[in-house]
Length: 203
Image (cartoon, rainbow, N blue to C red; front, side, top):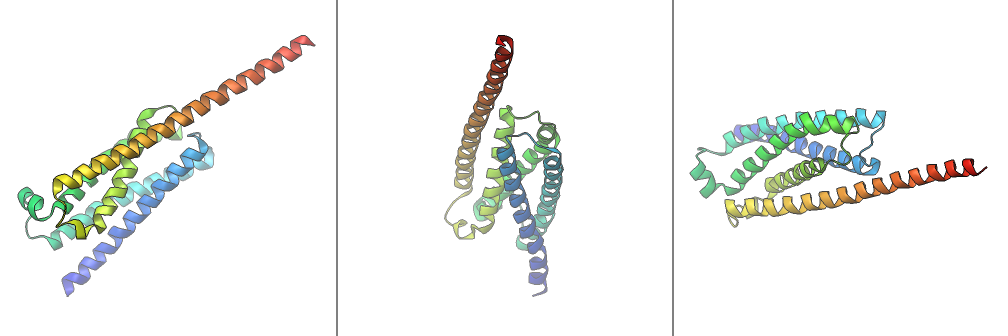
């Protein structure tokens, strides 16, 4: 009974950190799409704060997650995880990818976004798509206990690859629309400027 109470105390911040992170990522993505990757001063402050909160939540997820694994499992050998806990092993792999990708985003991509230098960088959409798909799939694995005895480790990873590929393709499609739209507005502004100049010259 005591162990179950301890596990519950650890599980709660684990779930809370996951919810906060996914919510923060969706807020950032929607904000970036609406602003077309051109942030004003207040947007930059919000972006920086949410990015730091998400980064902190990721650390909480690792710490609490490792404690949960310690409470739930007697052994952590690869063969045991593959045969007996394929869902857990898949989640560890996905969260590892998510962490590496998150560090790269935090160190390389986010500073460019804050400085408004990322609007036409496809890497931002690729890594962003990888981030949101990994967070969503990791949270799905957290509640996919009924599938643990139905789907093996390879199938879990295959589903993740397919899901991530779809999200990245959609991200690149959105990037193409935004970039082309940005080019259109740039040409439109130049034409208006040219017309005004030509009108002045004619007078």
